[in-house]
Amino acid sequence: MILSGCKNLIDNKSGTKDISQSETEDVHRLDWFKEAKFGMFIHWGPYSQLAGEYKGQRVPVGKNAEWIMKELKIPAQEYRDLAHSFNPVMFNADSIVSLAKRAGMKYIVITAKHHDGFAMYHSEASEYNISDWTPFKRDPLKELSISCKEAGIKFCVYYSHREDWDHPGGYGNDWDYDNDRGPDFYDHQKFDNYLEEKAKPQLRELLTAYGPVGLVWFDRGMYTPEQGLEFVKLVHDLQPSTLINGRVGHYDQEFIGDYQSMSDNGMPAGGIEEYWETPMTLNTTWGFSKYDTLWKSPATVIQRLVEIVSRGGNFLLNIGPKGSGEIPSATVDILNKAGSWIERNGEAIYGTESSPFGELPWGYCTVKENKLYLFIRDWPTDGVLNITGLKNKITMVYPLNERDVKLSVKVNEKNVSIELPDAPPDYPLSVIVLETEGPLEVDPQPVRPGENGKYELTCLNAITHGNAVTRFNRKGGFHISKWKGPEDFAEWIVSADKPGKFRLDISYSAPREWEGMKFEIFIGDKRFERTVSCTGELFEFQEFPVGYAELTSSGNFTVKIRPKDVSDSWLMYLRSLTLIPVENIKSSGWGSD
Ligand code: GLC
Figure 1 (cartoon, protein in one colour):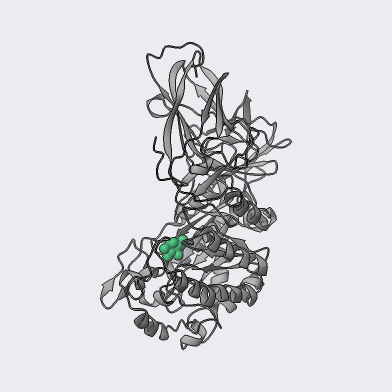
Figure 2 (figure 1 turned 90 degrees about the vertical axis):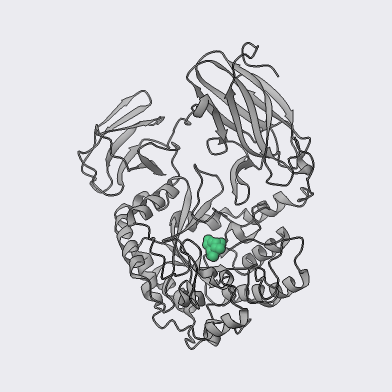
């Protein structure tokens, strides 16, 4: 156990919980977002005209073409000269909005300023903007905000708040200004100048001159929680209902903002409880590259959307318009094709909740009121679809798009078998609707032994109670937290095929402030009481042995962990409990403490 390296990262009396709770309490802000599920991300700027190449040098496919300035270390002055010739005459806000609509997207997030520091709207705070700096003169964000409003699409902006390779005080330019420094080394004065004369005024402009802004998408974090909070406050003071994504704060600090941004192209293996969104791009770059033709198929887009929605999140899919303003034809084609499937099956996506069954071997599931939407990916060869754990009476089962075709169902205890039509009615996923009587009731899915007979009780298969929640942090991954007393606990139903002896390990992280708090773990009727050790920094996880346990018969049992006492602090960031089979332990009944 390592006890060194712990820093006073957060003062719990005023820090962690106050930051995230007070700023995220307005849950209604999220209503439209939870309904929307699918959004369009647009990365567009002067980098788009370079299209991944400058002076014969390329940004390799697989790397981000919008990073060309940094990748090729183009001096800020030279990049400014390049930006002078940016003239995207083919830009047409209406056609972008209608593409988004056809694709079934309900919000658009456009880069108002990316890391290159160039504003894609008419900014008073900096003349380095598309209206004042280029022959184009127009304000594409204004045009887009108007088209969005007319079409009933939420207009949203991306703003790179810490990273700015043009401003001498912004983060990230290490070739002109030596500004690629970590939190302990950056020049506070220069950075504050950048925040005060550029980043904050520009955000104020975006939040006052473009009508209601659905959300601000910040990127790549801030140095300190306080700086992140200033941006949260700035946004909410001007537009209280505007959402803020989780990247407003730094990755290795606590989550602030209204919803969590998963890593690029990433998502949880199961549902997490704080609302989240996965950003993904249609090829492998965010900004346009003429070399990148690694397009995802319409089927991939559809499956990814459904997978994300069934796990309880939103999907933000990126397109990179060309320097001319034109949308690459492959992009249009893929979105049109995906959109036609989404239009047919939208009822099963928008406004739904995550699957109550966890992972399903044949596809995905979403829920709305008394309806379960079953998305079949792998059509069963025997034509029978099995679902376990559903407790409700079933009133009707039918294909979403053939409501008159009633499918017959056999119920055997808690196993439901649906007789499917001979062939899948749709591609790549066919949706079957199962209507139930009364509010949905599903047995928790038991955890089964994995490799080597181990039971992995993770935050993703936990059932949480009270204030305990499963969370995500871009640096620290998934964990359970926010527990402050015995009422806030996590439990797992474990299904044992056979009796056996086990060692119980726990993996968690805890900064110095949480050290010494007591927690209890119950396995069946046995109880362990242990004390939290400091593991280092906030997201430095460590594994500790807890004790031994013996299971004397097969069947289901419960494992539960909770804080022993009420406290002001969270107990720990729990990553997992693991039951590892061991031979030769001398004990009887459930193991001893
Ligand atoms: C990464 C990239 C950035 C892009 C973002 C989108 O942070 O660095 O260029 O805007 O992902 O999620």
